[in-house]
Amino acid sequence: MIERILIVGASLAGVHAAEELRAAGFEGELTMLSAETEPPYDRPPLSKRFLAGHCGEEELSLRPVDSYAALGIKLHLGATATGLDLGRREVHTVDGTVHPFDGLVIATGSRPRWPAALPRLAGMHTLRTAADARRLADEFAGSPRVAVLGGGFIGAEVAATARGLGLDVTIVEAAPTLMSRALGPSFGDLLVRIHRDHGVDVRCGAAVVDVTGDIRVDGLMLADGTRVDADVVVVGVGNAPVTGWLASSGLELDDGVVCDETCATGVAGVVAAGDVARWRHPRLGVTRSEHHSNAVEQGMAAARTLLGQAAPYAPVGYVWSDQYEHKIHALGSWQPGAETRMIGPSLACFVREGQVVGAAGIDARREVMRLRKVIEQGEPCPVSTG
Amino acid sequence: MTGQAHVTAADGNTRTVPVRYGVKLMPELRSARVGVVGMCGGNAACGTCHVYVSPSWLGALKAPGTDEADMLDELESRSPQSRLACQIAFGPELDGIELAVAPHD
Picture: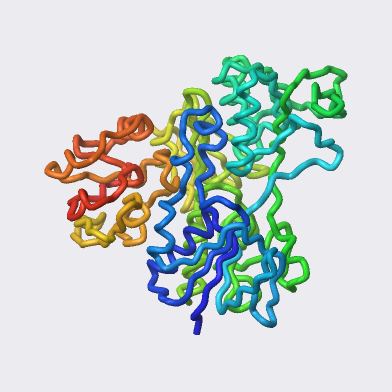
């Protein structure tokens, strides 16, 4: 009988797990630990409106602060987990507190990767937390020349926001196009064009060989011998799951917490959700997702699993991005080996072995959404969306 | 600290859903399983929490912000009663609100 549930991590996945536990009828003790010192907030604005100064602090808040208490959730801030003892079924936090549990939701998320060869000079940033966004916004206020290292979601959005503020921006991306890991090379070409049209110096297929500057960064040297002058460098080269605190727990780890298709780990009463979870997707195989909608849906799915209402977690996957005046929407994902078929001027289907595995569009939300069933049921590619 | 929303769900049945004051309508409706999806988690980006608010309650709502207005303009099933549940903050002034879950595009 589960009487005490502990949720480690109080961002999207953790908060949605907590709310779903209550919605599904769990009336026992519910505690949520957050490594952050501020109440849970939503991340999408951090690289967009918040970074641009177009949205206040209060708009970041995920829920009204008193809503946790209203649901009977004990929220501990600044409570970074340092260890998990599966024998005693307790989690240890940085201040020495021991949190016993019957059921555990692991939702510690991910943090930005920092390439080992890259020095950490002043002016070099990653963007993950609200504190990161505040620091970067302060830097942008000084009209710096900005270099963005990595042209994925974060990099492309930061570049668009910085251009919107009138800053000089260069994107340095190793792949041949932007956002190609998620959206494939052909679709990425459309994004390169958009960024160039807005005045960004886009360097694809480029590698950084050196960072120049003494205390503060002043530029990047690229493999082709060119130099990018920069007062601020934003590093957006992917994230790593936060599993250090689980290293000696005995839980199976492999670039995330290994879960079955219901988000359950190998240990009874222990589930994982969000960026930190590597689960067996019924259609896609073993995978891990760092997208907003997955954190929401997987948090809820893991909660139900914990309450004995397990079902295979098989999301289509949804992601959006705002860049300049454009809204990009994608369902499913491009996958290595998938062919991109343009079925509209800014609308693509990703097809693998004759089946649609994803779709993406620029300013084509409705057309993308209509492909949801096609992706879910693995149907052949439509000729056009009419 | 909790009020009610009278919701005509996607399946056509009408239900009374408890809603806490101070929170947005979307997560509460999603928890109640009335057909609200809320894929983007409350960012007015996906249009999957589209509801029709009863005309007598429309006036009690704050006007849509730019993001919500842009999204509503795009919805095929839009009507003059259309709103995104993720942009409606619930409070005592909305206790008893009547709305219907809109069909998805």
